[in-house]
Length: 94
Image (tube, rainbow, N blue to C red; front, side, top):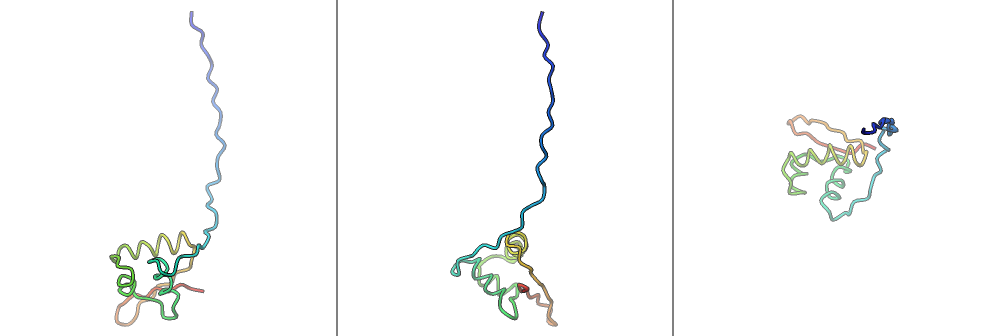
């Protein structure tokens, strides 16, 4: 005869799903990230074409950096406005 063992199930402790507040990290001024952040901190901000020219990235990569790194990872408030000529300008609020 074989012995049967009773399996006991235990509940896993649920981890908190809240993310900690993002921490703004310093970027090197000579890096692409630093150059883009410097352009965004100017009073008039920067257009997408200025950001692509400064970084050498394609427009979709710049927009991804703005969304993923600037907004989410660094936790900075990014404002976007459209000028009369239809060009969108981005600036860091604050």
